[in-house]
Length: 518
Image 1 (tube, rainbow, N blue to C red):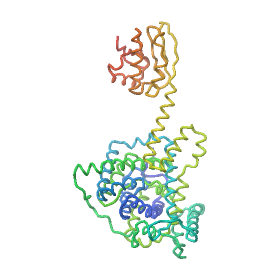
Image 2: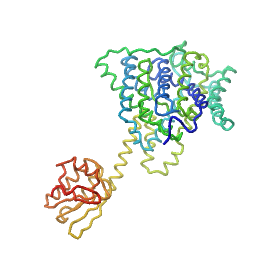
Image 3: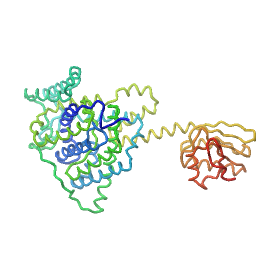
Image 4: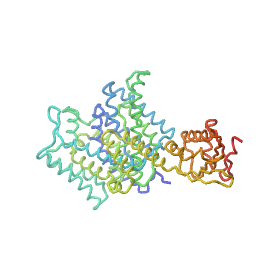
């Protein structure tokens, strides 16, 4: 059993340096997601600090980075547009309460039902989403607020700096691992850009362009405690509850899937229910401190893990460093060229995308390949929560369809003249139609035995099918008996009571009940 609080390759120095790298990458992301949600940049930056800090200390996955995310921002925008930012803060508080309840009732374990093809589609889709998000950095803002693609010298400078960033990240680890390659790339490219006064956009240009305010800045003060200014009434609850449930679901799905990805990358195991509690506490705090809330960020988590961050110190450092940027180092951080951060994110895309899935799709069953492609496409064009739901549902339907075809029977007549039907395969809602077609009640002898030694009764549909079969034999004056029922099947039959009128034959091997109708 892994101890997630003490990774085997834990290094405080690596955690601190990787945390600084993540903090630099968090700035434009938090600002961008704030504008997506329709709130001020500082609301997103505060969320990145608060959510990142609390989940790093109390969450279930050390090394995973949380903050303001696009998946939750796209849900928030409608609420902000219709009722204002104070209702958003109230909704974020309720979101946190719902997530804490999910942790208390241990709902985090249900992430285990997400099939592997859905996971692959999830990471591939997010890699594409991250890539597409970076394309906006290759545009420039016009005075009238519109945007156009870079051309000429600014484009060439941008491409050169992005390429240099990616080259440093790729080749530096071959020379030394004393400093995270992403951090070295950001510092190097920033020094080159500032030293040569290159004509390329930086962080402050991004903030000004997004806000349309020439005086915009990431400089700010400490977040202040404030109860959301909304009426405490059922009407308010009626307004925010739908958004809160969606936000809670989206946040937990993205967080728990990211937790699983980090588990695989680090060879350790996170605690899904504890992560639900950590995310909930972070969002409740966000709502009371004027922040938009958030969840796990797969891009920043990949940067952290690839930079050597393994322990809680990495997430803590990222959150605290971001706050220090806001309070004391805004003029310096604002000079970082966007090209450096774009280059880092491009490397995240290359590392996140499951390139082996191209080869895998030629080797796995067609239905699994279809699910991978489906989840990838739905993630890109809608959102990841919906994509995961679609993937799980399709996988479940495929599973049911495949197993519905596997209900078989072998028949013979025993020495007492009874006909034995030996079932092979599960009996559930998908297989009941085929099950009923296996029997010949008109031509069978007086007593018929259905042997469940290699089958099992799975659900209510199966019970009703057994009852239907018994009625068919009863109508022609014959009796149906069940044999070799497993204990859980007997429990289903006992719960059904009078719904199922059949004999259960005692079998000492399976320790089943005596004939009920004797």
